[in-house]
Image: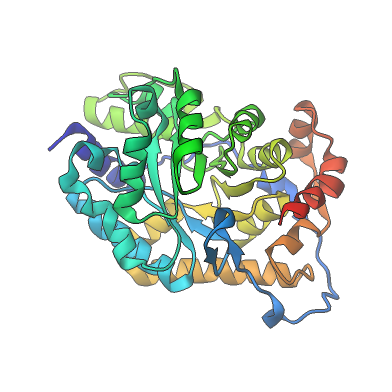
Length: 374
């Protein structure tokens, strides 16, 4: 069994039971959606469906973002996640497919997602460091073909690679490879972070290369710097690469990352993920300018702790809470949340001002400007 396969299983076991969430906040608590007591619509009028990255339609603006694959013991996890995604008509991503590119015998641990979810959106996944080390169009096409995927995410994880015992902190040449992929692939390319958040600069650069889909995966949820430190400590008695406060506080908080992504690429499709734990978090992420919300850790823990029924209840509750939030703002669809008044205050408002984003202008103009591309 390869080191990559072994690491996949270790990651799942660790995330399922260890304290891997950042101490820093998503800053979503500093967003208030203004309640409308006279919505002038019925709850049944709300249609949460939308097109994923401009392609296939999903029934609700929710994604189970990529987590695992590559080891026989996690095949069931991807299958069960996919089954629930199919039931609810939401999107699902798999973890990095590097393991299957290296060893095709593990491909089924990813392919099961499409087998169990034949109609909904399935997203393939490769890591940016592998692009730096030689992966290109051929490997990306192989990853897409493996799943009959509707899109492929290229994940950015410099923090994780810097603190992983076996890390590959190699990012030179990645921009050129992203340009090559964006021009050559027949499916949408998603630029995805892994818990420390996309920045305005990264989104602007990627959008200039033709990339129009982004998963911000901001600070405030699972932090892979922290996860790798915990894993290293468990294996060696102490972390080989101590991270200090970086393991809790390094990154762009989810709320900031969503605003910066929408500000940098108003015509893009944005997945607001990183610390999303319930339907209100999801509604806030969308109201800030995301097209949909993404969850990972809550879905994995619900599945492992309470089985498919627990995961089913989590997803059902989040979708209902989203529908209720739209209803209570008088929004008949997802993008109605972009029109509803917001309060952005406290630490989030201050951080956006420091980053030269006019909060009032963003609330009243930027989201509405983005609607012209919908």
